Image (cartoon, rainbow, N blue to C red):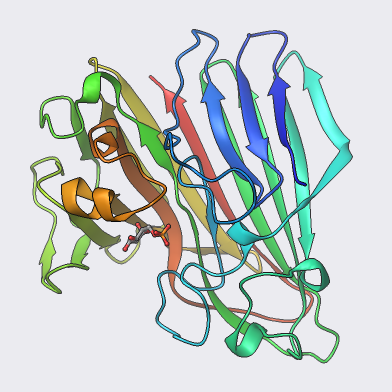
Length: 299
Ligand SMILES: O=P(O)(O)OC[C@H]1O[C@H](O)[C@H](O)[C@@H](O)[C@@H]1O
C-alpha cells in the first residue's frame, strides 16, 4: 500500500503533500495557508488509478498518439521510491526526491515500453517549497546499455485550484502570457494563433499551445479566483540543450466532468489545468538526461 507524505518548510510554514503512487504532488499550501492545487473530491488515492488532481506526470506520451501505449504513459500509475536521504528542511526551502526505475514499472506499460523492451531509464522527481513557491523537476535518464535512444513527450499536468468556483468567470480565471503561441484545439482540430486577449474558459477546453520559434521558456500568469494570480514558469533541457516548452490548457466542463468517475460533477468550476511540457518529439540518447522544471508561485 503506497502512502501520502507531507513535507513542511519550518522557516516559512509552507508545505506540500505527495503520493508515492505516481510521485503525484497532491497539495501545495503557501505560508499564508492557501491551497494552490486542485484535488478532486472523488480522486482515487488507493493506487487503482492515476490521481485526479495535483501534478500527475506524463511520459513517454501525451494523450494516446500510440494506441499500443496507455494515455499519458506510465509515470503516473506506478509506485515511486522515496529517496529518504534527499529530504531537507532549511532556511531557504524544504524538499525531497523520488525515483522510478523502469524495472519497477508494473502498470501501464505497452508498445515499445512493454516488458521485453530494449530501452531502460530512471526517472527522478524533485519537489521543493519555500513560502509561496513550489519547484518541481522531472528528470529522465536513458540508462539503456545497448546504446538505444528513445523518443518521448513529457508534461507536468498541473491542476490549479480556483477559489470561489470562479473558473468560468473570465475576469477571475485566465491564462496570460501565451501571445504569439500556435493553438491546436484538441476538440475541434482547429488551429489559430494567440492574440492579445487572455485565454479564458468557455465550455470544454482542451488546447495545446506551441511556442513561436526562439521561445524556449514558458511563463504565464494564471488568474485563480478571488483576485489571486499564480505565476508559472517552465523550462526543458535535453542533453544540455534547451527544448521549447509547450503548454496545455484543459477544463472538462459539465458533461465530461460528469462522465469521469473520479471527478466531482460540479468541480469543473474549481480548477484549471495549465500543463507545461515537451510535446515535440524529443530524442534522448543513451547515457543522457532530459529535464522538465516547473516553478509555480502565488503572486
Ligand atoms: O483523463 P486523463 O487521462 O487524466 O486526461 C485528462 C486530460 O489531460 C490533458 O489535459 C489532455 O489534453 C486532455 O485531453 C485529457 O482529457
